[in-house]
Length: 395
Image (cartoon, rainbow, N blue to C red; front, side, top):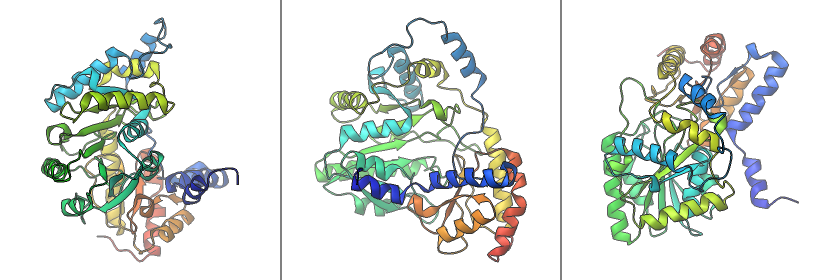
């Protein structure tokens, strides 16, 4: 075998999201795009805001923007990000606390590379983004999965039991992919207290890696509690893939709280990791383009309309699901215990969704409603037929 056994095993397990995306391409080729309802991938359908397009045009004739810059990013871009995070958190965040990265995935890998020694543990709260396990493994760590509560809020007692002498970090994703849950300020405050107490008792620094690419996609007037206010050793990893609809441009950043232990060495380690993991630096033009757009977002109302329509549709035919507070996913309960079997049944109706098993939460399935509204409307008969197949009744 030419490739490593480990990677071969990962390929076998694969990513359910990508598998369904590829199956969608096959079905569309066979039955026509209008007859396939692909809710598998969180790929924003919106175009970037007008401000972004104007900024890109203004940069085209600027000399020198395609050259190398410091590995952490252009100083003026880092300053812009720092000002925004300082205003939101109320802390003295500075440019030296920011590293521009190749998306949030790049940011998480950079942080994990800087933090982990082989065999150290990273706690994941299920359900979680599929790739977290692979990111932790990339850097010699071991994932420890902790289930959330029935309503997908944090189970702080379970988290406390999972933290031990080998724990180095907890990864938290809010608004959550796949549930759309936004963890409350009370929960974030309690988590900060737990990490402080555990760190003190164990004589080690335990970090919170807060994965926040959906933080501006919030509904119904809900507010987003800033982790820096409540957690000392906090590192934010985020991107503009969702709030500016730039998923393919791979531009994001990580920022460490000024309260982090050994902050200067931590930042040096993350800049080093950014370079040596092969990213070298974040894309130059994208850095400059987003510098002045830290408070700009796409039209969130369009996602809320999609959420409301799909929630109405699903509950109307009998599926059990919570109404998301943010992001662009629904995570209904599967009508049968085997969520993979259910997903395969949905596929036969040309509905493409991802099984909860892939997110560490069997018995559910994920719907990405980052799709055109007309596709949601076209999918209504298929959802009705699928619900009827499993004997569901309107709630």
